[in-house]
Length: 96
Length: 527
Image 1 (cartoon, rainbow over the protein chains, first blue to last red):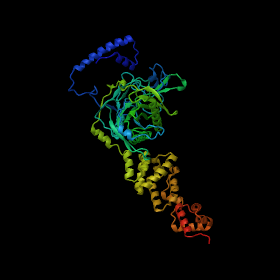
Image 2: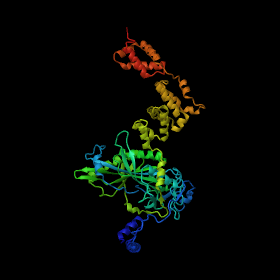
Image 3: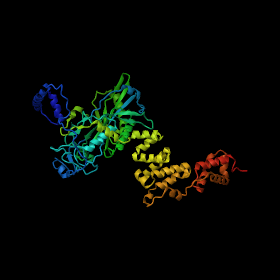
Image 4: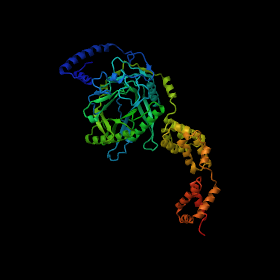
């Protein structure tokens, strides 16, 4: 699977990364190498292998419903770049 | 959110041509699919034990897990899964043995992890149905197919202070991680009325199952509508691009928004001729005050969410035996209950609908009255007309009402006594109102039925007494007799009033009938 510059640009946008033209070039090369490396897996014949939907073999791990104490608000907000002691403050989100 | 698989059923489009928008010259069909998010009634969140209680102070119900701190691990709430499974089974969905959860990635300030834990390609249920019908015959009964119902977590809330203009938005993460069941319908709905009926039936089902409080004001039930038009043109069938309408805060809003959107899409179609596939799926928000939908960001491609299995959560395996057990434990659901009321008790579809919509407790009360009195129709009439009126006036529940005031025994007795004539029907409602009075709650000894009857002076009046009374009244009112003889039958009304003053137990209908008969026979005529 070849990785194009457009692919990298799109992924960067989705990840909210602003990349310069030079960075795009470098990253396209580097990421393409990684993808090619992983692509070696395609050489294995998996015709007789059941597809798996999840990497963990365990299933049905549940916790009982019931309330336990939450974080005190000061602690919850402590790491926020900006807050007003009630809520996290972020640049205005409009239009939605 | 998942993308609804689009399919064009041109045959049904031809049959179900829209009639409700009369100003439209060209015929079109409005095609609607609904996505409903239901908050499940658990104590704690889906993946942590923070409370889901509505209305708490902002950011007081969060923990390192629900605010997306590194190193935390989610564990699924058993009750949330069980409630989701119960609903999916009640919607006749197929329950696959294997289901898993996926990460749906997008950036938004109310989503602290940068992804929502949802279900993508292997949801916990798919392929169900919900039957809708309308006792007012606005549309034919039909089966609406359910694409899937899957379990996911809710996001937080952003509060923007409009007055402050460009000020920051405040984020409250109390709601993050609240369990949601997303129920997606196929685009099988064809009018705003059908969409409303689907939502009402779904809400009723959820209420009977007890899986959600369905409180729309508190956001426990949220609706998005996918709408487009199928048109018949000279050059063949066509469809307009699909629009997803958000911010629908009431069933009425859903109806109005779809109606508006259909008209808007028709106008755009006439201007641009743009077809499905020629423009990306658009998201529009409903502005309830203005009564219009407004454009929002264009919907990202499904693949842009870059779904992948959440490695922190393990899959859930549900065996067919478990599904059978859940099915057996559902109890009687609204559709079956309505069916029983119409077939076994002979009630009209409308009566059955009114009763079932009021909840199981009221239906049970009515059925006990029906059994005890042997008269289902009267039981239904008394409950839908008088009992519901009193409950509304007094703000009491049916449970309180039957315990404190009129038990099902009492009401059955009243119905029987009215039937036998022991209680004149003219006074039945008065008697009921006394029995239904809330004040009896405060009495140590609730008055017995007989005592109430006695205290009101209610007694049967036999026909000879009635005839004597009528004769007396006719003799004393020669003018009324003359009026009636001259064709003014309604003049007899004044005599009914007088008769009721003399004896409140008389039946007005009977007095009227007797008086008219006596006048016919010549009684009371001037010599």
